[in-house]
Amino acid sequence: MLETRSPEQLRAHYEVERELADRLRRASKQQRCALYTSLYDELFRRVPSHPVLTRKQSPQQQRAEVRQQLGLLSRFLDKDTTFLEIGPGDCALSFEVASRVKAVYAVDVSDIITRSVEVPDNFRLILSDGSNVPVPKGSINVAYSHQLMEHLHPEDAVDQLREIFDALAPGGVYLVVTPSRLDGPHDISRPFDPVAKGLHLKEYTITGLRKLLREVGFSSVRFYLNAGKLCVRFPLLPMVVLEWFLDRLPDRLRQPVARSAVVRRLIAIRLAGFKK
Image 1: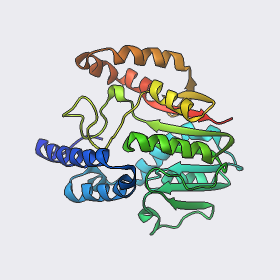
Image 2: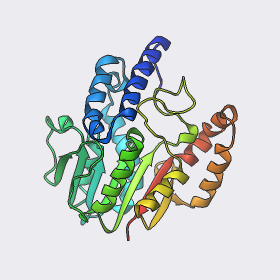
Image 3: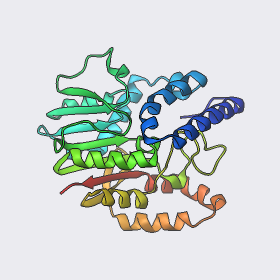
Image 4: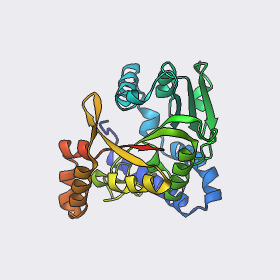
């Protein structure tokens, strides 16, 4: 979305978010369990101009975003699917998926979103400490997260991947969408730093996240390319070569190349990890 805030407001937001992110990076595992929720509450209190508070999504925009995500998801869903969304936000996607599948679990750190809305009968919201996934092991056919993994401490991200893997039934798939480090940063750091220093605690590459998924136990990993309203499977090798090339360019050269419309679309991370 187009940024309408003044340079002074952006700088103030950056300073607050960097302070909070540093606090989270320094915290122990036990401390982070409580911090994920409280830090965001503090962020929104101290940064009243934050886009989450000031930009209200229209019903048309919400439907368009759900349709775009279904472009990747739909091929994996049927009436016998048990679906899990990690970090569901306003739950619009989970509610839509509920009409297509057997059951939906949504795991989040807060239940505020669902307190005042009517939810589908086959939908269940489960509270998490920010990295755990408290659903029955082996119960999930399709797990999904969108713009979530970058907000987790790297240690918690690995722990969460392990929990998602354990939650999947044999033959299950985890679909993860997250921004690429190579055309970032994608948080408030962008005007000020070459890498994310705010509440994007780690931004990834296709190559790095694929390696992490394999280390956790996923037997195979596929990459999907956003092609307009559809997502199509695309070979991983060209992406690995492209990322290798971009990663070796100095910042002043890499950023304009990686942020060009074509390259930005190519390196956007949409990976599917499959469990045997």
